Picture (cartoon, rainbow, N blue to C red):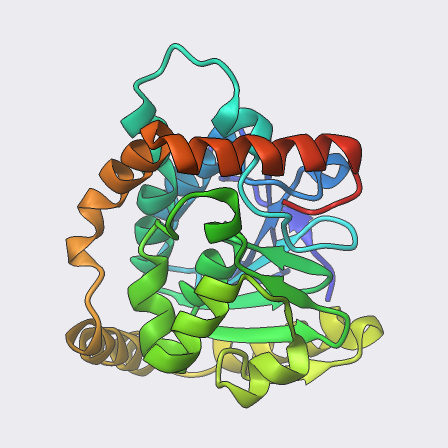
Length: 273
């Protein structure tokens, strides 16, 4: 599918790239930090909020595809951004991911996550925020927060519990072990696994098919499913996620674990966060 720069995309975007198909019914939102494996910086999360709110105003858009530049979806939140010196309120920084996840979840259009390569930490949460998920067969998911000395935040716990069930959510969050696209499909986390070379075409075909369906019926169905899943495991209580992250940052054991993790990462720059 031919994509064009969206003529009405929000101004000033530096970490996201917004394109559209010929008739404007499909919008592609690219995490555009390829040299950083699309790590989720504070700037990127803020721009994702801006773009998500902009999409609410675009009645002509029927499908939104979230994907990453290059070979990976995202290496997770940017450790340099979140652990380095900052003049911002720590709670404000910690809360950015929750705001981004909620804004993406509130997009009225059908959302599709197109995932390849590494999908780590906050990337798993953003994937869970999308309605449909297509993964390339080279995708590796991992939730390393506990190994980093912090709890999974951004509303990730309830989202994973309602997608894959409490037992597997506990295992994957607490063990921090990687799981591949095949296991993700078996768990019900992704809808389809395709060869990496076919991912773009498969997603484009699905997006075109969904964009051709009656918009009212699609949006109403999405809203109904969202309402039911919120009853199963609501995300409204996650306003205190930032508080738990701030407490973890001040806890001596958590800080020691975090520093050891960052030191190991410094010795191996190729390791995803």
